[in-house]
Length: 446
Image (cartoon, rainbow, N blue to C red; front, side, top):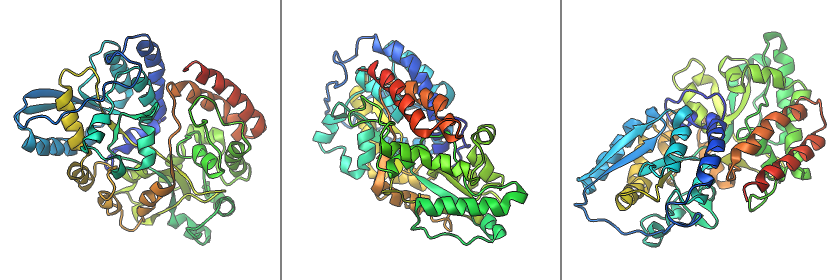
C-alpha cells in the first residue's frame, strides 16, 4: 500500500501498506508481460504436472523474497528441506519491496523468473494470466498440498480462471487497535467487543470531544482500502468487484453505505480530516498517542511490541455492520512455469507449505503462518492484547479485491474517493463516477 510500518516480527508490515506500490509496478508489468508469449504455450493454465523427486536429486534453486526480516526463518525452513533433499542448494534472493516488482516484471518479460518466488494478491492475476507461474494442480492431486489446510479466502485469492497457482504462506486480517490509556484519560468506558457501526461511531465522537484539548481523536479514516473502506463495503453487504472481476460494484447501494461510514465518521469530528490523514497517517496518529482507536492490520503488532505503549493496547474485532467481515490477504509461494528446475522448485514449494515449516515460521515470529493450527505463537507475542481476534476473523474474511491490473483502479480510488470522504461531493455521485471509470479500466483487462 503506501507508507509502511517497519516490520520486525511478522514481516507483514513490509508489504501490506505498500501493496499499492507493488500494484503500480504491475501497471508497467501489464505492458511488458501481456505482449510476450507464455512460457507454457497457454494463457494461464500451465501444465500442472507434478512428480515427487528422488531424495538424491541435484539442483540449485533461486528463491526470491522481499523481506529481510524473514530470512532467518526461511533459512531454518531450508535447513529442514535439506534434511530431505541434501543435494538441492537454495539461494535466497532478497530484493527490497520498492524494487521487487520492477525486477520481477523484467524477469517475467525475458522468461528468467526465479525458480520459486513470493507473490501478492494485486499482482497475482497478471502473472497467472500470462502463463508465468505454474499451477499447483499436480501437487493437489497427489495429496502433497491440501488446500483445506488454508483459509478458503486465501485459496480463492490465488485462484485464476478456476485454477489455483499459489500456496498461501502467511496471512493478515484487520481489527481495531485500542489505546486503553486514552479511554481512561477521556473517562470513556471501553465498549463491548460485540459492537456495531453505531457503537464505533458514537464511541469515536465521544472520545474526540473529550480529548479535543489534547489534540487527540477517537478514531480515524484514511485512504487505505484494505484497512478501511473495503472492510465496511463488505460489512454493508457490498463488494468492490463483481464475481468474475469484470465490473465495478461501487455504484451499488450497499457499497455506497460502506463508503458513507467513513464520510460520517469524519463529518462528526470523530476522525481527523482526510487532509490531516494525508499529512499524518492513522497509524502514526496512534503510535504518537493521539488516536484512541486505529483500524489496522495484524501486521501493526510489529510497531508496538517493545514500545512504551504496548501495555496499554488491546485489539477489538471490527464493528459489525449488516454482517461481520474483514479483508484477508497473504503472500503465497509460486513456482515459475519456465523454471529449468521446476520439479525441485515444486518440492521446495510443497515443503514450505507443510505444517512443519509453517509451524517453524510461526514459532520464530516471522509471520502469521497460513497453515491452520500453526498460529498460536503469534498470539503469545502480545499476550495481553488479545491478538486471537485476528485469527478468529478468518472465519468471516473476504479476499482482498484484485484483478489483472489492480493498479489502474487503485489509482482511481486514490484520486476520487477523498472528495467523498471529505464531504465535498456526495458519496453516491462519487461512487457512480468511480464505477464508470473503473469499468473502463477493467474492460481493458478482458
